[in-house]
Length: 90
Image (cartoon, rainbow, N blue to C red; front, side):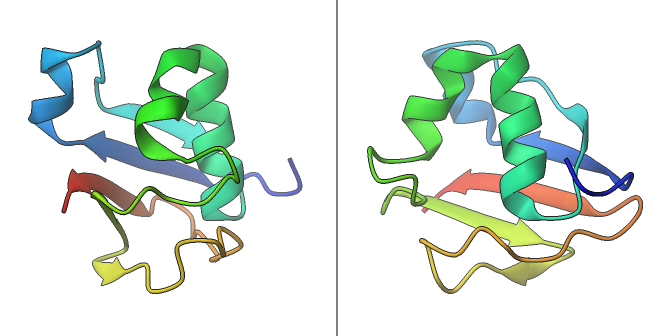
């Protein structure tokens, strides 16, 4: 990973019906890097969040620093130091 920023990644509590999805601290300079760090520790979560092309699934909404992710395929959105990332069901 190219950055040393640490983000806090929060997941919707509805995911807990299917698998553990606790709030975690994740390193990464981009949303994609932070999510990859989360998936390294919880690989099953990837399939619920990303499709087989690596884009955010249609039923998932992602907010980085309170800003919605508009392009589901572009995970290169910068993540600042101590940024909050929220992953919710849309």
